[in-house]
Structure formats: structure tokens, C-alpha cells
Amino acid sequence: MKATEREMRILVKELDQKETGAIEYDEFLNTCICSYIYLKEMKLRQAFARLDTEKSGYISIEQMKDTLSSAEFAFPNDALERIFRLVLGIDLN
Image (cartoon, rainbow, N blue to C red; front, top):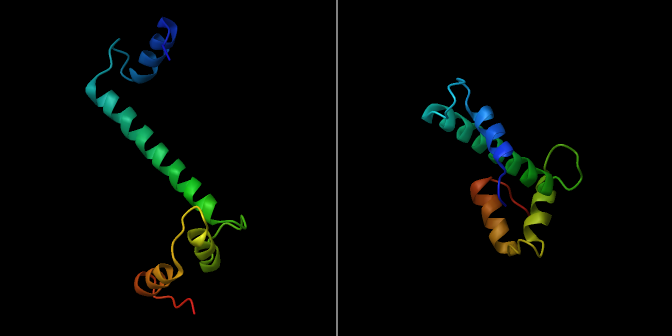
């Protein structure tokens, strides 16, 4: 995908927070950090939504177990039991 001259001017204008006509390092860094945080939050929200199969706003142990043992993730039951028991202190039996 090739950016047009107009698109590049818009991009520079958005990044040039001090309006100097150039993108300074701190402006570039600030934009990268904000983008990184936004993308991380989006990925976390997507992961939560995949685990919250009932769309209740929280993830139950059963939802987590069902999702992780599904064909997509294919965690063996014994591995899940160890993880839940050792890391979370929860006995699935």
C-alpha cells in the first residue's frame, strides 16, 4: 500500500505535536508508546472476550477450562489441572 502525498501531510501534521513542520524524536516516541499501549489493550480485550464465552463481564473457572481444552488450544486435561492447582491454587476435581 502506497501513501499519497496528501496522506503523508496529514500523518506529519498529526505527529508534529509542536507544529515545527518536522517530527521530533519525542513526538515520534510519544506516538509509538500511545499506539503500543492501545494495541496491547485491544489484544487484552480480545483475549478476555474469547474467554468470557457467556459475555457476563467475568471469566469463570469453567469457561477458562472449556476454552483452554478446546480444539483451538488443545491443552491436555492433566496439564490444565496442574496449572490450575499449582498457579491458581484451584482443584478442578
